[in-house]
Image (spheres, one colour):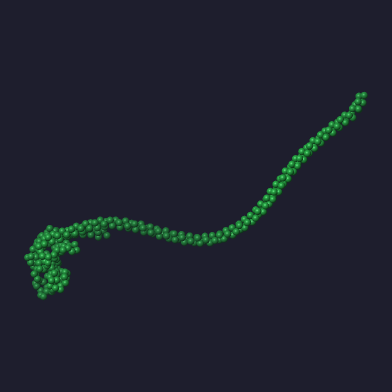
Length: 325
C-alpha cells in the first residue's frame, strides 16, 4: 500500500519539480531580459554618447583641418619672411664686415691722432707749468720792481722839490740883477744860472768885474746852505776868432776855460767846497742864438753855472735795480 502510494505520489513530485524549474528558468529569463534591456538601454545611451563625441570630433577635426590649412599658409609666409630676413642678414653681415673694416681703420687713425694729441697735451702741460713758474717769478720780480719804482718815484719827487727849492733860493738871492744880465731857469731837472759877459767880464778878459763878483758872492752864500748840490761852471763864447794871441790864450777854447776857472775860484773863495765845483769850457760850440748879429753874439758870450742836487739815493736805487736784473 505504502509502495502504491509512493508510486502514485512520485509522478506528482516530478511534475512539481519541473514546474519549479520552469518557473526558475522563466524568472531567470525575465531577469536576463531585464538585464538585456538595461544593457541595451545603456548601450544605446553609450552609442548616442559615442555618436555625439564622434560629431564633436568631426567638428574638431574640421576646425583642425581648417587651422592646419591656415597654419600651413602662415608657415609658408613665415618661411618666405625667414628667407628674406636671412638674405637681408647676409647682406647686412657683409656690409657690416666692410663697415667694421672701415671703422677699424678709422679707429686706428683716431687712436694715433689721440696718442699724438695726448703727447702734445703733455708737452703743453709741461710748457704751462714752466710758464706758470715763469709767471710766478715775473710776478715776484714785478712786485720787487714796483717797490723799487715807488722808491724811485719818491726819490725823484724829493729831487724835484729840492731843485724847486734851490731855484727859488738862487732867484731870491740874485733878484737885484737885471734880467738881461742874469737869468735863473730850470732845464732837465737842473737849475741853470746864466750870467752874461756884460755882468762878468770885459771883452777878451778873464777877470770878473766887481759887479759880477758881488753876484757870485751872493750865489756862493746860497750854495753854502745847499751842501748836496754839485756845481758845474761852463764858459761859452761867440764864434769870433782871436786876431792875435793874448798871453796864454790862443783861441775861444782857452777863453771859455779860463773864464770858467776864474768863476769856479771865486765861488770856492766864497765858501763853496772845491770838491763840489767843476770848471769847463765849451768855446763857441753850444750857442743859444745864431752868431748872425752883435745882439746874438752877445747872448752867446755867457757863463752858465749848472746846479745839480746830488742824487746819491736815486743812484743807489738805480744801481740796485741794475744788480737785480
